[in-house]
Image 1 (cartoon, helix red, strand yellow):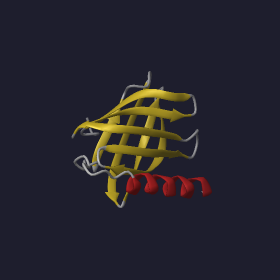
Image 2 (cartoon, one colour):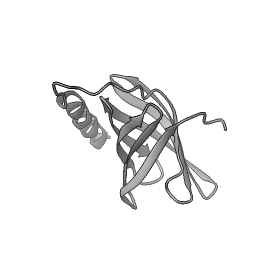
Image 3 (spheres, one colour):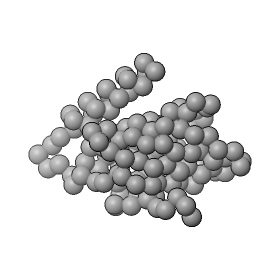
Length: 126
């Protein structure tokens, strides 16, 4: 639990300290997101934002689903997400909005190191 508070504090410092005279347009992260970039895996999550990004999702692999909580930060068009699992190693995603419906970045943690990932906004019921 302590590591989560340190991560949140670090994310808030990054989110509030990365201002320039020409801030990028702030993106809207609220909604449903998915990725199938990790071979044999589908990542689905729903995110909200009120000062910090929060949400929940599922890592679906070989027919088995692993739930996770999400906490993170959004600064302009840059995103940092921490995926907190109960039953497997936690993961993080650092990325940037390419457009209002696409985030491109890197997945880290567990067996993943700077693994390319694209999150697409979409309807998770499909």
